[in-house]
Length: 220
Image (cartoon, rainbow, N blue to C red; front, side, top):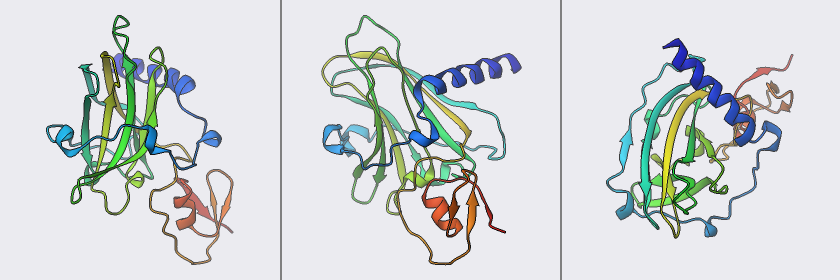
């Protein structure tokens, strides 16, 4: 068990250096969703709905899902996670890695994360990773990526024209000091200055949270 955990931690550390953006390089500009494929209810109605009961105080990185799949052209493969099954966004997040496993297939698999509103059956693109087929697509998400009207997150892999064989692995891990900003930008007007773990002064904890900061202290 210790050996397996050590290997998982080593893999994650290596991939972080190559695939994740540094905290000060996170792109907070709105995504241009017109370039991304949008799944429909009919294409995803048979997708798995994951449950992920976790120890939110644990510093351990854990593999919670790993699947090998052959992607057909213009076909989605993915899974849903309900809002209530995601961990505390101030403590933990989910990382997803999409790796091409068969170089003989010429398709370029891409990774997409959507917020899903069950009432309207609407998908909203949260972010995507569309690296070349020879590179690993890697994205992370938290509960705060969902808007208030969205009950679920959909994590999907997609190939446009050609097939591809892929491995999709989902990890649960502790958050960084600063992550992507929250989807719903709702703030309170209370003046109670705090210092974020990023060293920045915020008017209050609400504004720190909106900025994506995961911990802060009251300014003395």
